[in-house]
Length: 243
Image (tube, rainbow, N blue to C red; front, side):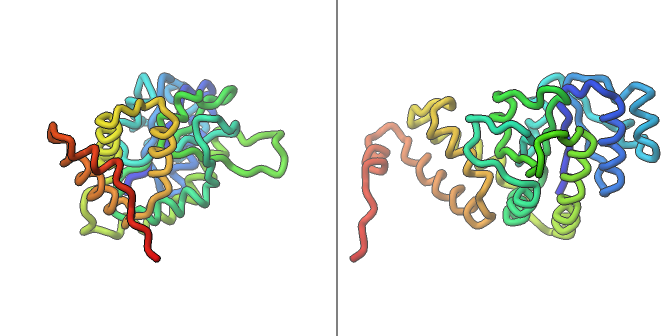
């Protein structure tokens, strides 16, 4: 499994250098940066210390949606809880969610927001799930480098375990999201609708066997969209209750 740490518009080079050092310490090297050149500043190089190669291989993107487009599963980290997500998972819970997905997820992105304002509501919505770090006191808050270090430490174990699955099939999480989006499109349910957003968010909590089931289930539904009225019978049919 590949885990990427994505920094959105970081301003302070020292924070980027600290993040790179944290990743190297925990065995990661996938750093992506959105709309910032802070990693090129001398201060970032000094702070990175023995992790300059992480900065040297940074992948740069102009928008967040571009930075996560090729990833199977994405996590928005945030201090403020937004209405765009119903559930906020701790870093430990994120680790567990990734573990139960097994081989359906091959690439993960952990997204961190701006030092001053964090991620926007739209950026949080772009991600599959949201996560926050429980703090005993809201102030002083963790800085960017500290937050990256905490997530990297917790996720380092799951990354090693998944890398041992050499014969695992290709990830399916991203394909399932696309398939369900097509189902909603056929049902004339807008991506901005509450049921669409909540359904997509709940995908993030599914285990591997549930993801396989939904692949089959959504495929069966899509087969019904053949121009006749069979889909209507499928949608209005109620399951039989057992006595």
